Image (cartoon, rainbow, N blue to C red; front, side, top):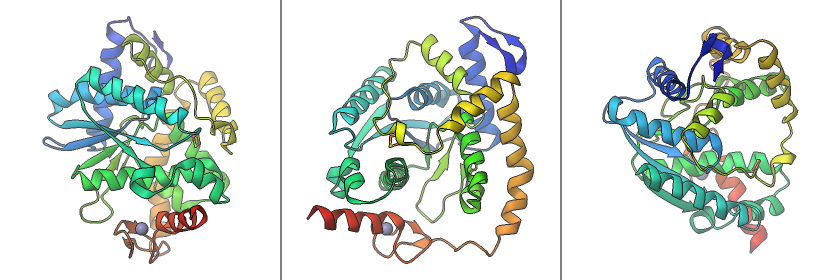
Length: 299
Ligand code: FES
Ligand code: ZN
C-alpha cells in the first residue's frame, strides 16, 4: 500500500498499524474521547461505519474508553435493504465482541423511511439524514452514552463543505466540526473519528482486516442531489494527493472560526423541543413536525 499523501510505502502488517495511529491522533487532537467515556458507534453495516467500529474497538483498551454499537432499522427497500444492514452490523459487532443494539424506527416512532418518503414531499436522503441524526442522538441519550460516533469520512466532510458553500447554507457549514459539543444537558456529544481519514485508506484497512461489510448501496442513493461532487473531489485528490485534507484542515482552522464570529447572534439558540425534549431551534423540533405529518397521512 502506498500512502501517497504521506509519501509512505507500507506493508500489509504496518498499514493497519499506521491507520489506527492516524485515527488515534484525530481522537486526541480534537479531544473526542476521554478515559472512562462510554461511546456509542452508529453502524449501518457499510464500509465506513463497520471499519469505524473495528478501529474504535481496537483503540478502546489502550485509550481507556468503552465502546458499544447501534444500528437503526430504517425500513428501507420494503425492509430488504435494512434487514441486510441490520444483520451485517450485528455479525460484525459479535465478531468484535462489542455490545450491540438494534433499534427499529417503526417500533420506536411509528413509521418506516419508505413510508415517510411516500408521505412527505422531501428527497429521501434528506429525510433519512433527519431521522438518523435524531434517532441516534435520542437512543444514545436514553442509554446514557457520553458520545455518539459516526463514520463520516474526510471525503464526506469535504463534500458537505463544498455543497454547503454552493448553496450558502451557513448554519450547516458552521456545524461541520469534528466534535459537536453536547447541545443541551444530557445530550451526548457527536464525534467523527474519520474526520481526517480518506475512504481509500478505510477500504484498505477493512479489506486487510477481512471485515465482511455490506457492499450493496442504499436503494435511494441514486437520488442523492449532490453526488456528482463526490467524483469531482475524488478526481481532485487523485491529481493532488493531500488536497482534501488541506481543504478540511484549512476550514477548521481559519474559515470556521471566522464564520462562527460572523454568525454570532444570527442563529437561533437551541432549546428543548416542547414535545420530545431534544434540542430544537423552534418550539417543536423538525423531527416531531415531520413525524406528525407522516403519522397523519398513515392514519
Ligand atoms: Fe439511503 Fe440517501 S437515503 S442513500
Ligand atoms: Zn421534538
